[in-house]
Length: 106
Image 1 (cartoon, rainbow, N blue to C red):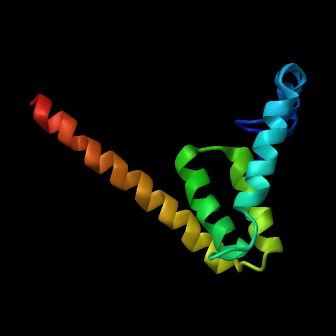
Image 2: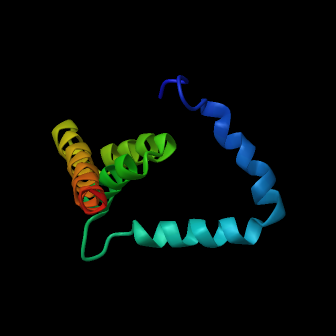
C-alpha cells in the first residue's frame, strides 16, 4: 500500500484507544474471527465480499488486509478484480439512488 494517503504506521495510533478499552477490541476481534470462519459461505467468498465492502467504506487497511486474506484463502487475481468492481458498482448505485434527493430539491 502506498503511503500517499495512509501511512503503514498509521494503525499504531490505535494503540492508545486499545489501551483504554482492550476488552472492546478483544470482542471485535473475536466477532471478526467468527464471521470469516467457514460456514454456509466459504472463507474465500467472505473475503471477496469484504474486498467489495472495503472499497465502499474506503478503508485502505481493510482493502489491503482482505486482499491478502482472500489470496491466502485461494482467490484468484481475476476474482479479486471482480470483487473490486462489485464494490465500485454498489458505490455508484448508492450515489445514483441519492440523486433522487437532488431531483426532489429541484
